[in-house]
Length: 292
Image (cartoon, rainbow, N blue to C red):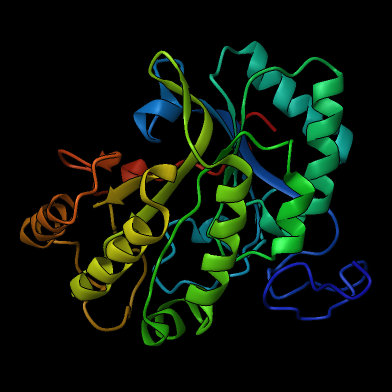
């Protein structure tokens, strides 16, 4: 934390006294810790996933649906020990797993919290729910601690990643991160319908970005095959004003149907499509410090 290089931004900020590019210092900030029912079926199950939402983010996506917390301005400071207690409390509530949402800028501390929680009796799987813009050396801290990796894979085009997330190198860094995740946890293991170990890669289809979505899916299937599950998401919800290009509108059914047909045509069989009406701010949790 003295000269932070823990993500691909490598901003070099002394996070003990200042905030990094991620919007936070060296304290862990949590905005919500509660059962969550809208993840993939093998994650949420019937009893929900124990989602712990962290404040701050090392991407600056113009369409961010969690912008209330991604700036790092909302949440409660918790210690490593208190974070472990949150995990144990969620387990006692009966959730299927502990789902760490946007955790990457706290990796070193979360790694210790997972170890602490295991020592205190945590037995459910740990899910690492990230944007995939991560440093491989930080991910290696998690080897043996994280059971399920649930990363986004947002773009292949550097033009789109620069314009929409201020990260022209997103694709290269996400590939490096996903390679490490697959090395650690590739090849899924299930207990009934619930995943106990594995990698699920999410791709959110954006309006007017169909060709890039096809490139992403083709790349993922060609490089990783059945070592991963792929979740193709239609839930893009315009949040905020003055969004660029076509981001001010939802994804159309025709756009999503085209991507679904393409995924099936190239042979993707392990994964998920979103069905029904998955668009709307009602799918965005209330970041009101529930459970913290």
